[in-house]
Image (cartoon, rainbow, N blue to C red; front, top):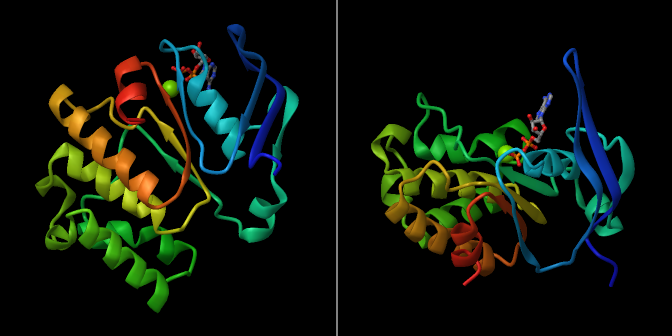
Length: 204
Ligand SMILES: Nc1ncnc2c1ncn2[C@@H]1O[C@H](COP(=O)(O)OP(=O)(O)O)[C@@H](O)[C@H]1O
Ligand SMILES: [Mg+2]
C-alpha cells in the first residue's frame, strides 16, 4: 500500500528583513498507516516548520508532500494538529471545548456526540466535562485537547511537543496515557520533540 504521506526532497527557507534562514534541507520521509513516528531534534532545528508543511499551513520552498488519495477523498479534516499549548478556551467548559471542532465544521450529530461521550468516559474526563479548563491538571488539559482533536476523526495526528509544558511527573503519566489513546483509537501519528525521553516513553 502506498504511504499515507510522502515527504519528498522538501526544503524550506524563511525570508525576513534580516535575511534568509534555511530551515529544512532535502527532507525525505514516509508515513504509513498505523505508524507512530517520533522525530527528535534540538530547539530551532525545523520540527514545527516540518509539521506546518505537512498540515498544509505553509508550502515547501522545494520538493513536495504527497498525500494518499484515501486522505484527500475522505473529507477535508484528515489531519489533526496538536500543539505544545493546549489552547483550551477558559470561558467554555471542558465539554464545550471538546465540541468546538464539531461546531465549527458543522459535524455535530448523534454519532459524533456519542463518540465524544465514549472518549470522555473511557479516558476519565466524563466526570469533569462541566468543569472549566483551569480546574483541570495539566495532564488532564492535554487529554481534553487530544479528545477535541480526535472528535473530528482525523486520519493522522501531528503532535508538536505536546508535553513540554508539563512537569516531569505529569509528562510521564500524560505521555503514557496519550500514547495509549492514540494506539487504542488506531491513529497514525507523527510526533516531534526536543526531548528524547518523551519520544521513547510515548512509544512504549
Ligand atoms: N516565521 C518565521 N520567520 C522567520 N524565521 C523563522 C520563522 N519560524 C521559524 N523560523 C526559524 O526557523 C528555524 C526553525 O524553526 P522551528 O521550525 O520553529 O524549529 P523547532 O520547532 O525545531 O524548534 C529557527 O531558526 C527559527 O528561528
Ligand atoms: Mg517547534
